[in-house]
Length: 261
Ligand SMILES: [Zn+2]
Image 1 (cartoon, helix red, strand yellow):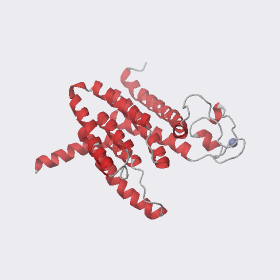
Image 2 (image 1 turned 180 degrees about the vertical axis):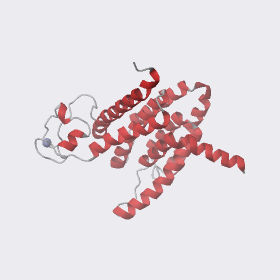
Image 3 (image 1 turned 135 degrees about the vertical axis):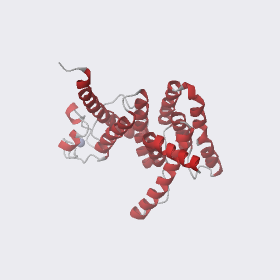
Image 4 (image 1 turned 90 degrees about the horizontal axis):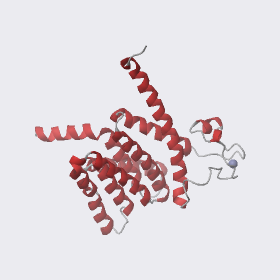
């Protein structure tokens, strides 16, 4: 008979595979959100269908990643091309979850961070397309933040200050620039993320987001020769996600660096 220690790695691998598959399935749901939220459609009721011919998708056409691959990225009925965004969001979500699981392990906070990553995928794709960040999505991250405060209630002030640390300066920028530099959606996003991460972490997320945003945006402008208008949300989300993964070691290194001086 296997004892617990011997079974340990197998259970771990089994659970990891399970999380990956769940990540693909939730990724599939994120695609529905990405398509329907900007149109103001209900994300739960009607069944998924081909955007062109209206063909209602059967269960075997809704298997994340694999359906798209097997069908060669086309609708089975009308052969209309299905955007590569669908499998990319599914795989992206599963991989984003894997990385969080790898860093944080099987702990309650992992669930919060995975859910935050998923919501940020939806925010990023919609913001990139429409330049709007849906309030409901920001409120969802805010709810994750409240759960974080409850879990770590002894350090509640760290998170409450986090909620204000970036959102207040951003709000001032929004008012002064009359929403040209950034939008209220960015303010709410950083308030919600600040509540989830705490103040040092949300400051780091903002620095990372702004730095990556300016570098990537300049490259993209040169490559695509497109307009200057910047959807800020995706870069802020990237900063938040990187802080979830690497915030602890970066902050530790930075503080030890300050102490040495
Ligand atoms: Zn079709």
